[in-house]
Length: 170
Image 1: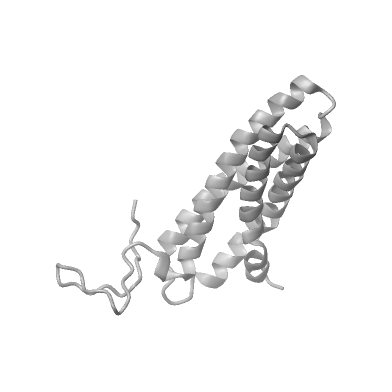
Image 2: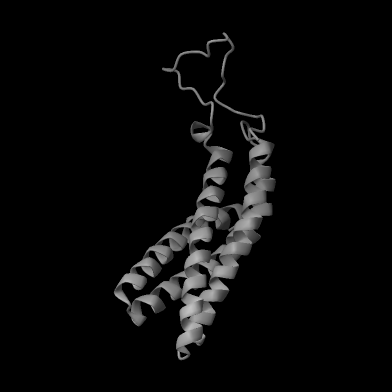
């Protein structure tokens, strides 16, 4: 397996685990159940661990796809930038979740960790969703802004839209 295959095989795992961990953690606040909290912490820890090989294979994946037709270097750069931020957030979330698992015998500390974990899990889920969205745009021009299908009308200014958006939309 090359870096691109590993990246694609694992890329959805931390995204999904971030959301699932967040949802279960929110449920644990309502249920006030230690088991539910531990499950959320294990899932958030797993999300952080799965993010490591995904991030580590990103550069190798870029080397493969940047030469393909229709691939936008600007979108790759945006994806890389948010991926770096997301990696920090998800690793922080995994670390806090690990602390929550290890320090659950200390009620005051455990409660603070649970609240911190909720905040970081929310940030992680949002960051991972944005990272995934930008990553999808690299090869899926249909989710880029400004994409027109053959059934769509041409822009009012008379210009043609090829379906790719090579410009940086910042």
